[in-house]
Length: 513
Image 1 (cartoon, rainbow, N blue to C red):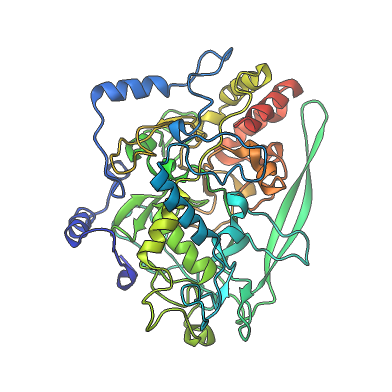
Image 2 (cartoon, rainbow, N blue to C red):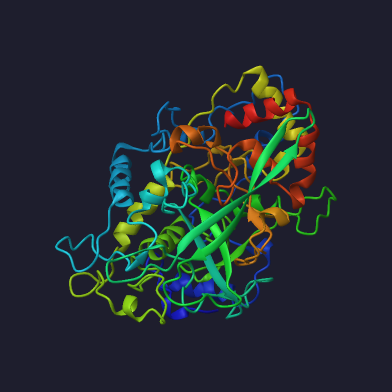
């Protein structure tokens, strides 16, 4: 284990933490991973039979499957026709819960300011940061985007950075040890308070890559090259590994968090035992909140196990705000950045941390309960044909359509819901074209988590543009498909070769999600 002095588990009892740590004292096989973050009831044999039946792959594509129009079950919200389609509370929240949701939304949108300030509850920004609020990256709770040219900032995109080596976790098999870059930490911040130089400017150049489809149509892909320009704190380490990341959409996160880990692991086939070319495997990460290995579910490489830890890491890295899980007040600043470390911060005599556990609970509740909009046109003949193409092509081998969440008395809004996220949350080798060559946890430089597809058809409506994949390089859903390689190469090639009406139907199906 490492970073043990920075672990604070304020939401669990000491006895629970000790028992969990004892279980993790030896290497934890994937099959023995646990959902420590949830209080759930074990499933009965009858429930498992019903779940297997309702989540089985379809065989009839002449009509929609039952409940398919409700991708989040009872938590589904109506599909609005404006940019707020991703900003609605889950459809089954109580009146009291909606109040918590709105307060959490206020914290999510909150503009943080530098210290010292008269607004004591809002100071602590930076000094180095990527954005002043969560909403500045997750615009309208949707996807981020690449800069609009060299004069635009990268407000919803940044570079992660690390170097090989450092301490690993004996409890996690195949963990790939990395450590923060000595001068720049774990991610590059392109904004800074007055008197502090920003770490860098994100520089992107694109090379046009034409792809010819079966009917002679040509699609031009954008192949990006990234550089950290105008470095503010000296050169990068010679072995620095950079990985571009665009902020993902926020809908349905609480439901993804509530999928039983055993159901996710049931889709893993790391040795490709069935010979279908698909070998998904879980990322296993160290859960700071529980002091044990857990399956990663969140982030482009599934590097975070829970919404709480994902949110706390974003406060620290993106905004420079301390919290119970990340109590360092200078965020991602390194020891080499003395001015950043010694600058005034928002913690001290008035409050111990810049955002406390109550605030974090509200932000996590908000993030957990952003509603998934209802499907559109589920019974349209072209959509149904596109759905058949989706399954026949093998897309569903990774983009698993449906799951049923745990039964939980303390989270009724996510409890025992039939959901349709179209993701297995597993890592897959996506080929050299999408490789960032930077490992994260067990994820190699060629592996990425399967992104959920629900809501993908509303991207332009919410975000004002269509940019997909981890770095926003794809400007259409077809471009995103054409970037697939590795395990998805065969499916990608099938899409290239299929007749245009079939390909158009496939895209129409994706746009209905």
